[in-house]
Length: 144
Image (cartoon, rainbow, N blue to C red):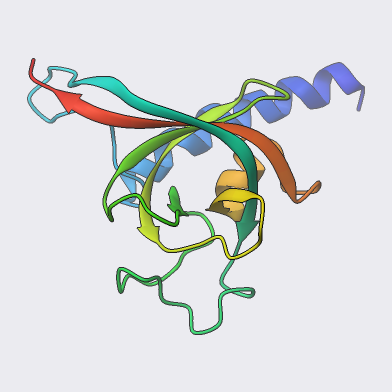
């Protein structure tokens, strides 16, 4: 398989995988069931290092919010943002991004601003590397 065909296959897999996450309840969809798209404003922006964690690395398997951790869910850990806050994480090296919900506390490593699940890290392209420079945009729902 050539590099180009691998890229096409990965892109197609991403197109199929991302919508299925919201359909299974693993991530919060950014749309309403009434057919109107809610609007989000960027409330604040942080830049820094992100890392990932998983069921295997999270002793106990539960998050600070009490929810069971899932490697594939669109969730993250942040030191100070309120539980339930939605943020857009963008990998600054490749521009890939995903909206995640804060449901845990961390990271507990100096110099890191957010931990995402291993599934998010894979989807935005830093699972193998382990850490990435990211932009974290805190999203606030606005009135339609």
